[in-house]
Image 1: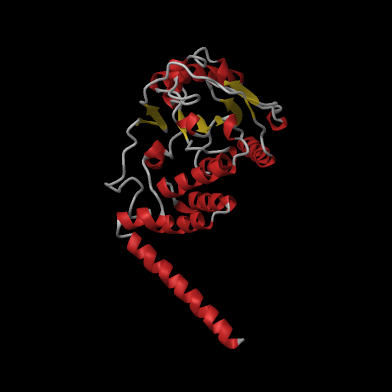
Image 2: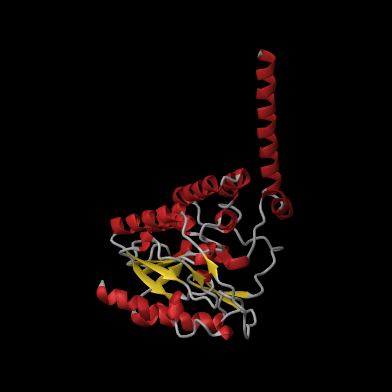
Length: 311
């Protein structure tokens, strides 16, 4: 029995040493890091979004936007500026409400906005795989570190039940102070996106002319409902107005209004006059640049209505 435990201890020590050697080698080679640790990417420009927030997080921000790619490619916070309001977009690819809940906790430790606008794109409701995609995006591509941010990355990784993503949080926490996300010169550019500031990525894909839609029925999961309840509680503690946003889609999903939406302010992006114009999109739910600008102007006017009601 003693021999068994000695072998087990030796194996554990050897495994730990191999991880240390791997981490050290990867921290000195972009190529090794990319192939062995994580596929850092410019897609969606989480690196630039986080850089901008690092530089401006001590300033006042009226509106925080949270959600998936329908949010970061569809909402230009600068549309609020003519109304004397400011905003920032904390959305990432396939970011479900569970991950938005974690991101918001870190944000509210740094600023006290008037509004939180939660984009709840219905097609990803109940999809567990999207939780991991968004988690990897923040872990690998964000330059927001420190105790608050690193903690929520680990929580998201733990909740994803993906062991390697949890290991990645340790690696990137160690190297990001000295090697920023986006500094790899070999990373492919997001050739169909231009980072315009405040978290918005303007999409430059060619617009579509038409599309055939299939009706899909979706349902908010219990996990997501609990996340929205948590977001609501955190907003109420801070005196922040929470607004639920269903983004515009050419092809809408069918759903019964979730019970957790009761009593919350709600904006249906499908009421935007351009919501059913194919030329505003490059697929059935992502807006091209012009469509996003027009939608953002409309959305800003809706947010202003809540601002007048709750100054």
